[in-house]
Image 1 (cartoon, rainbow, N blue to C red):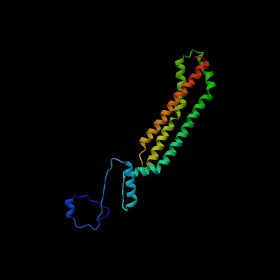
Image 2: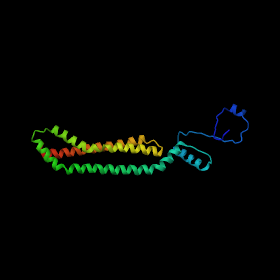
Image 3: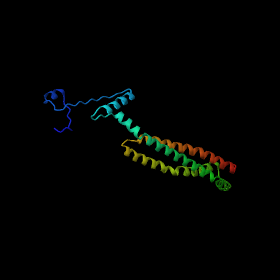
Image 4: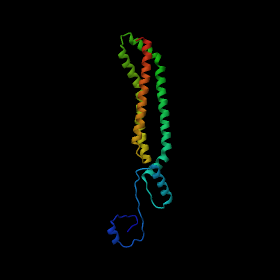
Length: 190
């Protein structure tokens, strides 16, 4: 019988077998409390035992320990680029505000209502802010590739991070749109 085959038999059947040439034991347990104690025990077992030991909690701990800094750096760069893009959009919008004031003063002479002005400014600002939403799609693809590279499912974490970025972008959009609309309205005295 090859050494890589394993059979699970009842005690009754085991007693009928001839004396084995090699005896190995398999122990399994599941801890429900004290995650730190489980990690500590698993670490000791990994160091002391010469044969294969597997602990799901410890494997996950090691994976997080090994790839956690990489994920942090990736998230940090994402935040830096996200803030940079938001600042770029903000300054791009306010660099054009004088020209937009002239444009909307001309349009206001043709009886542009306040509701219509808000609608036009909202659309203009939305195009500027949400056209780069392709970056979220790119981020989702990159995180799924990273997930397969690390053999670790990052779907939940990816969804959380991308949702937070989208939420922040939306909040930023509403704030900028409010102040931008206020500035344009003040210029045309609505």
